[in-house]
Length: 629
Image (cartoon, rainbow, N blue to C red; front, side):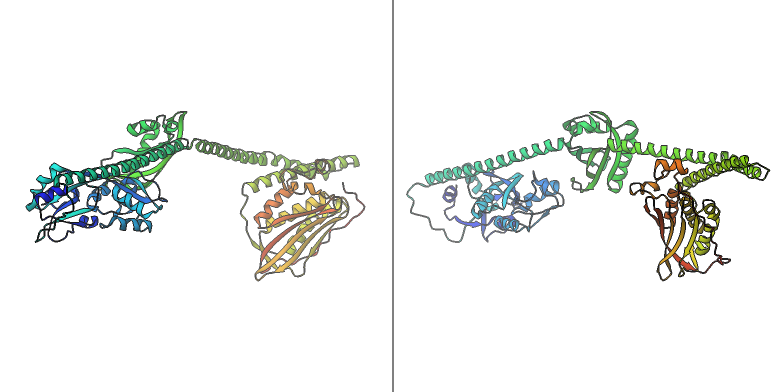
């Protein structure tokens, strides 16, 4: 073809020009024609020949980069190319947000890609294959076809338009993708005289060789692209097989400016959630909404429309008819940049997941909570009824027994009356313990810390229980630490109940010896004292295996204990709950047949001594000789 042009223009002179300079339109002065110029780069006034060669454009990426299928995978990435004029409109449509650099040579762009300064290079396959082969660099690979070709032509200035009449009949493709600038200098170029064959034969031979070379290059490029396409189809097939087994459906959906919805991408087990195949859902996406429960369609669409107005996320749960009937489905999607280029539509990427089991568990928990609330109401009603219906007759019975004790009775009658009175007192105590336990479980009254004289409190408990100790022939001692602060901030009512229950429990399970109430100062703090209250007895004791169990409601150390001593098994359970309300914890140490010690450690702030707190030492009468049962 050059020979034919030289025949028409004997003074023709050839000069190579880099492809990136052609992309910028930078030509040597005096250039009259360019061979190998891409049709998309031509100046407006320059006429051009028919296309003599089309070379596919490809995307080059690093081997460690995520795989892509086309230009759409370059969103938000930096791209280098020698021909940005042809690539720019395609990137704007397919990969909005991609940054396209100014034109540069292919080898320069590939070096930037190796250095990770760009994310991809788009260039024609011939240049890419040659440079990758020459560079022997395994870090780069042809990642995907770019989806367009370079259409190479001969372009001339308007004054040299007649050259096209010589060129077009030849249409001899050239193997080089570097542009060739043709210039006509002031003096004729010297002709080569070392070739003896006629000009037409030289042109024909050159054309045949060029055609053969370009055919081989084109075949190699086609084979590489075909192999890459096969690899990507296999990868996509494996991805579909894996996603089909996932318990979720991944989607990408769009809402246009007019409110129309479309599904851009869909993969996963759509059949299980919506009762249709992936292909059906992609083509007839309206069927997805039709599969939603009629009662849920309106709320779902209202939620999605509201999310579209603010370009916010989607998070909604609804029912849909799937392969196994109605299922609960959760939809969660996050907004992403729209692929339409103008930003008028809204797109989300997200997933649909089967949450039927979670919904069933939540429903079961709600039912259980309602049943528990109803049980609490029923229990409260029962306790109120028991307190009123049983408490009043019990008070009457005990009052009548007291009145009967003041009448003249013989020895036998008094013995029977004492037994009856003892049974009534025990029944009343059990009733009070049950009511106290349930009040504590229901929250009870709030703790109220007031100034309290602890020494007077312990002596008061001692005085109350002294008659019981004397009746069993036991001693009841009160041991106070001399360093005890005069006043302490504590809920005295609850602390008195703890000590009274513990001491009464100790007296009940002690047959000989006695019970000791101790109050010890562990250490002094800046604003109060760390104290230890103890109730120690010489009773039957508790085996190590049962010591933890005795704090459970309605539990005693042994089954025989209930038969021997009676009681509800609530004393220690109530004391533990009261101690927790005061900020302390009960500790139990017991040795069978030797005795039990229950301790309560508390920190109590100091305060002034409350009025009328002058202590009076009260010593319970002691007795000996009784045997513990």
